[in-house]
Amino acid sequence: MPRKYAIPLVTFVAFLVLLVGGALAYDSATSQTIADGVKVGSVDVGGLSAQQAKAKLQQDLLGELETPVTVTRGTREWRMGPGQSKVAVNIDGSVDAALAKSNQANFVVRAYRKLSGTSVDATVTPEVQYSRPAVNDLVNEVAKDVDRKAKDAALSFTVTAVAPVPSQRGVAVRRPQLRRAIKEALTTPGASHVVPATVKVIKPKITTGQLASKYPVLITVDRSNFKLTLFKDLKPVKTYTIAVGQAGLETPAGLYSIQDKQVDPVWHVPNSDWAGDLAGKSIPPGPTNPIKARWMGIAAGAGIHGTGDPGSLGSAASHGCVRMAVPDVIDLYDRVSVGTPVFIA
Image 1 (cartoon, rainbow, N blue to C red):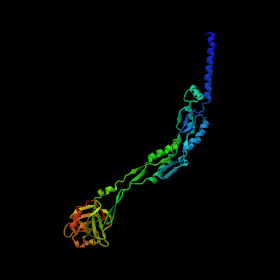
Image 2: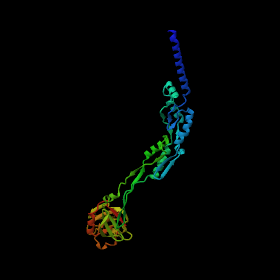
Image 3: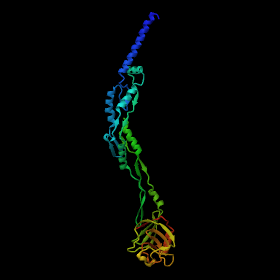
Image 4: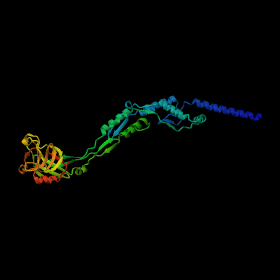
């Protein structure tokens, strides 16, 4: 090679060696400095050394995540502080990840980027740990205070009226959604630490509007006034004069229902002192059977039946049953079914 070309070539090679060596030296000297534009969560750690970044994350990131979480529902609040949530951030791992983001390109690109002030648009998701049992406890506490069971519509009975007790809708905290929202508040930098508790509405099984169809026919027995009233669609439609149990053998008070129905029933005489020689016997339909025409059993051997002693109606004369005139008991029998509620007071 002619001398006139050799000198410039050597000079150029020497320049390249110096340039590459300088770039390597500069890159090595700044290898523990995080590139501009790198964030850990919402915290900008660009241009910081590893130690500086750790100190900043300890103050800014962990400080932010340790903010108490407040769950709200209307005007009510439930709070969980850092002592309960036990939030912890892997700061060393986050800084290592930030340095790795900074050093992804080759040393020439890194050196140029550092010398020219070009930033890296990169975000490291910090590794955050928290107490799951504490979150579950908070969710359960909120649910305990907020949840309300649905109430089915019901009936309020008196001997002369049947009044609807309105149904009520219930509510229940959406627990999985609340757990996720609390987790996000605890682990996501920049997320709100005020978490609204959402609920789902629980419908009653029986609404007020369904009562009439659920109870198309009802019976009330007024023992004091010796009256039986038939209700249809929750309205009284017919009242009958009756006899009820005498002193010591009172017709049982309470809410019952018709258990069975029989035409011209056999009388199965109870084993009671008042039955005398008939106790335990079965008396077929006929003159000696006091249960006339129809039987509608209600509770504990007591029932509604026809009587052959119409003069006893309007008094406390039976051994616990409800007596009716034969035409009346036949009329009532055809209007009711097994399961019809019977309120006795």
